[in-house]
Image 1: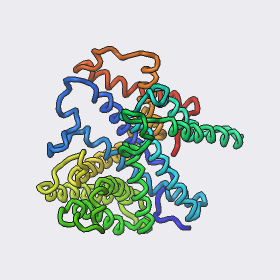
Image 2: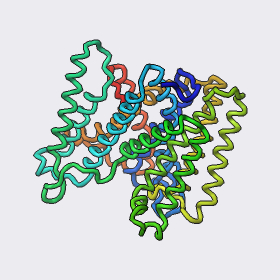
Image 3: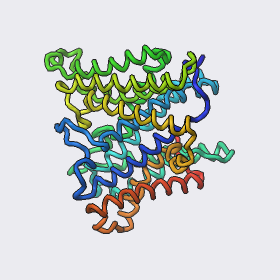
Image 4: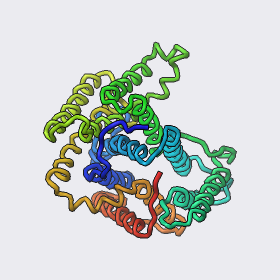
Length: 399
């Protein structure tokens, strides 16, 4: 099986920096969501606001970075000797992992019945995160048998926790996807985009066609007249996945514009092409906006196109600063989170449930602005430092 593009096998610092910054901001805004009295521009916009803030760009940024990594990841698997079946299994395993994590985390938020479960939701959640670490930790010791035993314990633990879970007022509901959760949505978008990338064999024109097809899918799915046709009615419920896939495809396209060296291009030309890509997305979003307003909640194409354009412009700057000007010392702070995003993402949830079990609470002043805003920054930095410490203890999660 041959590789699709001529990409470098080295890590791109600017991609890692963008991923690390996104994770830091994500932790910050998640903590900030529980703070009273913060300015409107520091909150998610309501579904019908036809507006967006930097908070509404965090989730699409993560999807965009997932896309930027896909060409490198697939090439690396092929170089290591993966055949077609092995590659598909690896992609499917990662996607299923994200879906499973998403479903578990969503059910731990609402709809649970602690009395029927026989334990608090915080205890159940902490056991879940222990199993996650057992299953997806990158073990560095050589004893393969012990690795399989630990992973096996984690898998069995997840199955047991799934059976233990009960929801609903009468406690008869089982673990189910109320919605897929952030990780689950990323999993679906990653799976679909990876399949499309292989389908067009990494061809840039083919990927652009797929990118446009996602917008067309959304438009068709929202047409009331077509929703009455049985063959097309299913599209209405899948428009969100199409837009999330668009964001991942946008990241793939940007990576190929910058790092595919099959055709020699100057750095200036690559930057100009990326800038034009951002400009085109903004223009398309502008013309679509009268029909599909900006909305993260409704996952509209205008929101996605503007978000992808913002990510592209930020990356152009980071690439110039880090990879061209070599101003990269500051990126070390983000490296543990950038190379271990899953662990960094779940740390705040682990802390929350651990504090609940210990009957500990943050002071109420930390939940009111302006102190709460400062605290949210401190908390985000603290989580990054915990991730660094866990990395040193050989705790690294990899899907």
